[in-house]
Length: 189
Image (cartoon, rainbow, N blue to C red; front, side, top):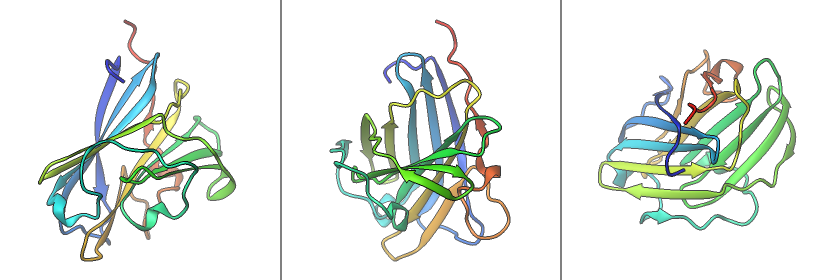
């Protein structure tokens, strides 16, 4: 999205049982516009050379067809639902252009994998910052709820789990408490 009418930036929290070594913080910028739907920009600050990421930057070649198991390494995730509804959609994005989309009819009750692909993915990289911008081509309704998360794998095998919040117990990005962002209508131009 070139000129989003509405933007916000939200920090993700590292799960207390999975501390990161190389990552200091992760934030997500959310852009929302009438023309382009919404866009997400996941930003990692830290020792980027110690994180499992492909080399280079720029527009990524989007893989044909979805890929399962992306959460087993560095992966960025978004979950979208309508207020008060049990069904939701999960989007997974790997920094190499692979993606997955799943439809659930209730908490962790998989209905089907969905052939949706993102419109565009673009990466920026420096020694201390990595950003992945995703324009999934989704036009959520006003009042839709969004959960955001990331799995970060470091080259030494350390894995940390990041989300807007963490319910008690092991990391669980599907938990209803994680749907913390309510999307509003873009500001009128």
